[in-house]
Image (cartoon, rainbow, N blue to C red):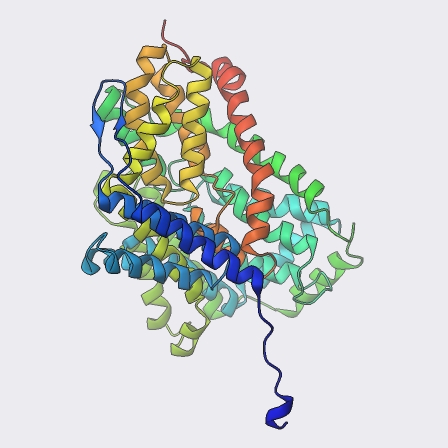
Length: 488
């Protein structure tokens, strides 16, 4: 091919528009005059400093670029660190150190577990067993995947669950007969797994760190203890209701092109038989991962284990995979670094909003608008704020900035603190709008079945459904189960 026939990529006006839109949002907010203080119901003022205003500006640019994917999502994350440093929002040592936060390494280790399950063949074995049970109807495959995902989040972190289930879904999808191309079934399978991992993770303290953090805040402010089993008692009906509603949601919005996959059960049985007995690496991988999950689960019950950090425990499995030669150096090339960078940037902007006081300013301004509202509107406003914030920053941080303010306002409106805590915890587990909201979202995105824009668009009706369920729980489900809703 000579120089005259070289094909040049076409000019993408849409990409340029949204890239410049993000830059415009940043510039307008960063260079605008100082904004008014936020004032809480007790009259305390929260100043939006120049650094906090800069954090909000970075927040807007990153959100725009992430939703419209003007550059790879991991590159947007790098821009978050760079902008903090170049515009003197936070020092480089602080802004970039967050890129190796323990939570990011936890996600790395979780992805390594999924990689091991795939390489050893355990994933295919599990997928074939599941398909033999659920059969050939695609609606039942959806349901089977969702139920298994939700059940696993009761005993292990939803990030680890997503990383474990993800390769299983790849194995299932390979039998759909459409190759790697995106389909409605593929979108529903992977996006549904991400949504359901969040729904299941709210039910016990083992599903995510947010529960333990929220209970700690609650005890410090209200001086009441919420036990492991009390949390599960109130969360189980809500979490499982959302799981089954999500099944219906995906059957409506992403109804598979094929009602059945003819011969799937027999094909799965045949492929399972071809795998033969368990290999040494499969057994070893299962033992190593099982041991890690057991230790992390026992941390909630055995005081002696509580001092052990969960990231160090799960990283021990990553090291073990190489010690026992289940993985080798070439396998590191299969790690989706785009996803790792995505969460590194999410941690950085989350800490930036928290440390500069920008998040607190937002929370106080939002909740103060509802200080004279009906108690139900006030509780729903808290849930809505946490739901939106948890799509952009760590759900732990979203709870940390909103719960203290909400619990101060609550007594004036006659609202029991328990309902505020549980409403916030429900929505904090289900960021359905942006990939950065939760690791399962980003892990599912790696399938290539959907874009960030599609995830956002489908997330809007899913988030509305979530808010309706929260309202139902506040008005009907929790009062019936004995939760105090209003102060007597």
